[in-house]
Amino acid sequence: MKTKKSRFDFSSIRTVSLLYFVIFAVLLLLLVWFLQNFLINNYYEEMRISEIRTSAKMLENKYHFNRKAFNDAAVDVSKNSGVYILVSSSDGTISYNYGAGVQPVSLGYDYEISEANTNLRNSNLNSVSITTKEDDSDLYTLVYASYLNPDSKDEILYLVAPLYPVRSTVQILRSQFHLITLFSLIVAVVLALYLSRRLSGPIDNITKSAVELSKGNFNVKFNGGMFTETNELARTLNTASYEMQRSDSYQRDLIANVTHDLKTPLTMIKSYAEMINDISGDNPKKRKEHLRVIISEADRLNKLVSDMLAMSRLQSGNIILDKTKFNIVEAAEEVFETYKYLSEQDGYTIKFNKPKATYVYGDLDKIKQVMINFISNAIKYSEDNKNIEINLKKAFSGKTIRFSVLDHGVGIPADELSHVWDRYYRTSANHKQSVDGNGLGLSIVKGILSLHNANYGVTSKEGVGSEFWFEMDVVKK
Ligand code: ADP
Picture 1 (cartoon, helix red, strand yellow):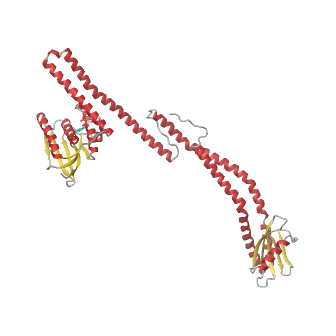
Picture 2 (cartoon, protein in one colour):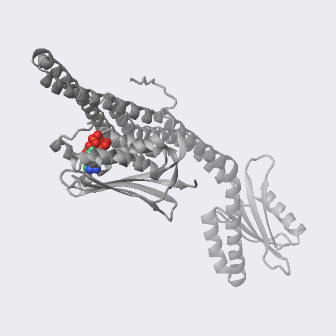
Picture 3 (cartoon, rainbow, N blue to C red):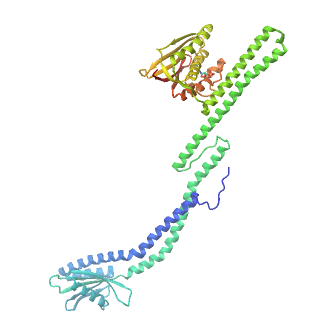
């Protein structure tokens, strides 16, 4: 399957991250622009006012203390902050003036000073700060005025600070703004492209590997790159591909097993039929013997096909249980009787330990089928020690009843124990012994018991024996 990549795929990682980065940059620029245009003036004024106030307080103290110190400090403040300093008495005589490092200066701030003076006299405060603007100019000026002697109110200290520098600063910032805009947009685009490449790289790799996998190449490895999430995804996919590989080889084995199991009896039937035709046709004894083989092979085929049918019905969930309340002791007894008769001839000793009549709810025939399977397996895999024990015992203080079949036969290797319930699974012991069987019995048992919500299991030791069991809830009669 090929995915067509358009140049402008609006849901691709690249486009989306580009978009988000650009939006981020634009928002940032808007914020800077807003700050520059609306807040910086106020902010600057606040700063200026507090700076001037601090300087004024310092100058007031020095004025009373020592005129020389006041002069020196005034020169400093004036030079550093670009402030014009003036002290005038109430009658208007100027006792000190100093402006921005030029001495003496002519009074350039008559308007501002008279405004501040009026403000101070009209208020009942000891100091005021005002912002003034002459009608014909667009320069704002910050004026601070305070009484040097609050009691006599005879001398006033003025600090005049032009606010124009902020405007030029804004101008400079504004011209820088274009540069910042360009720079941040370029950075956003570069970052977005870089990040999207880092991100989409591993995803592209994973996609390529997945395409390979879908073609049936199970050896493909998923590589997750540098991110935790993509690494996690790659790990999961590697596990999935391993599982697929396993299930694929299991399917292959399965088909091989089934065809083998179907082919063997068919070959036997064909060859024995040919033998009757060519050799034993007129010899009643030989013919009977050959016919016996044909019939037994046909039976085997028949059993295999019906087991396969039962299995596929169970698997597709296409099976309806005919549930009734029945006495499980009686059911086990019936099964036991058929085996007792069969086995006596072959030297088996089958013991049956049973409780009193106990009722369960389920499909009688299917439960009997489970019992038959356990017992016939015990017989099949018994070898020399032919003692078999069937136990029916109440458990969990009579709430459940447990059916088990114990044998002293070949047993099952520990690593194969969990597989005996799988379809067509036959343990390695079978290869040595060529015991008759198709590996479907226990998987049918598993299907039936699962449908009954019954617990079941096996304990076994290779060379010692096995015990297969299931449990059902006891119901009232
Ligand atoms: P089969 O027709 O081969 O007996 P089952 O599904 O009944 O198929 O059993 C699956 C496999 O489990 C058997 O082939 C055998 O290897 C193993 N098995 C089942 N029951 C026993 C047992 N009582 N003792 C030893 N091995 C057993």
